[in-house]
Length: 217
Image 1 (spheres, rainbow, N blue to C red):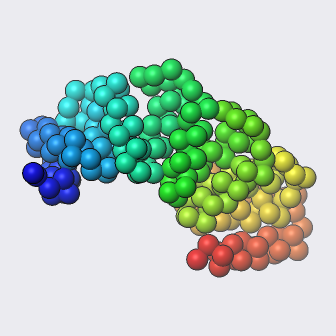
Image 2 (cartoon, rainbow, N blue to C red):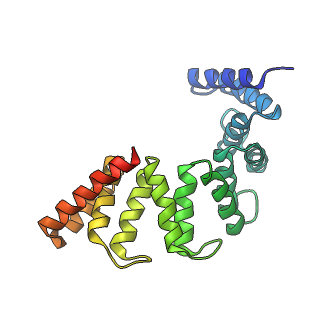
């Protein structure tokens, strides 16, 4: 029997060496072969190739099948991709409840995309109960994993008083953290907050941000 890991690595080498054409088609065949031998990463990657038509004809129906396989094999990214398809009704009916459950599965594996989406769904009550504390918890976990979107969302939640009274110092601290993590919108939000905060409040927020960096590391 062929080694699925070797097939997976060979597919990646071909993908890295080519912008398309025959090499990419060969990579898709190798990726499928590895996926069919129950390689979780290959199942997820082949699902993506099918979803976007890379090296193989685009097929959302087949992409759904391979994402399902990756999720069942325990890959967090596969669970997220499967949940995303159910959330948006790609090759299946829209099902926010199932999507939220799949995102929770992915979040258990520290998938930051899932944590970002879960926070939004919990904040809005989409696919389940509205839970502001849970939303903040998901985003805090994501931010500590280095995701700038989650840090930014925490800034918005604190500034807007979603689930708690507005806290501009905490909002400022999270926007600083988001900026450090590469979020391009965070500087705009910092600029909005500065005129309505005192120098002492900004200093306190900067101290909070430094403490966040320590806790994240």
